[in-house]
Image (cartoon, rainbow, N blue to C red; front, side, top):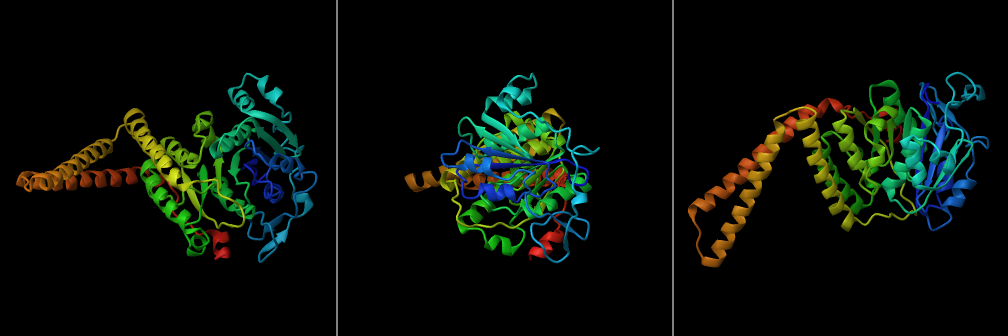
Length: 400
């Protein structure tokens, strides 16, 4: 447990036989459950998951910060090993004895609970070894699908907070406490890593990935309403059980882009979130993302999510006139652009154009952009309180 809260970690893995065991081994000891999800890998990922150490084997040394934080993976300034007496006893009050004990596809399918049955339907094999719940998909579900399965398993357990750490070894489990602290200490229900805040972190990111990230960051700000959020593609996250129950996990998007869609759903649920500076380690792992198709696909996902958010949050659940500013801005800008293109075509085809057309097009375009700008300002003001201001944090200062 962490500060009296049960914690689970979802580790999605597809063809990560070289990294997955080390990632599981590095998960902090205060984590009560590890949901290692093999997304129908074609290599030995499943074997490596089953070979990973259980809680009884010991995940390695745990460290406690002298300033009151917990868990860093290596010794260093301000870090001291914890005593064995500090470890949570599952049989004591406040321990983890209430977590699900029986883990099998059959036991999940035999219950009438929708979450249990949804987990069973997408799972080929399911077993628990110590604190590790090993889950193997029947077929490849995609990055979001593996996260979705892990979230379903976390809902079965009823853990208080659920983290996601990729199985490729890029994310440092030692900074997990930085993402947990806002949920434990503040009224925050979702935290995510931010690799774009510091130049040192950005310099470690491949150029193509960095450019794509900035583009999707801007689009996600508009679509989600979380205008102060950066690096929405960061998969290092923690979500509270209350927020997880509010976003309808069974309907989650199952491909890359799931994190962007999740932000949209969290916004509609008025969930407070926080960015936490984190670094990343790029080594020999191979990215499964094809950016030439990924960015257009996620952009369309964001457009659909944006329209759904406006309809649900500002027309159905409540009313706000910014919807009309968005609509009038988009319509006016679209007509202005089409009118301008027609004027250019007419000028090229006939050698002349009407003065009125030359005036109307830019007026419509400027008017439309003004409406859109006003809508964005109103949208940001409406959602500003849902994002905690950027904070460096103790660990971020240490990494700089």
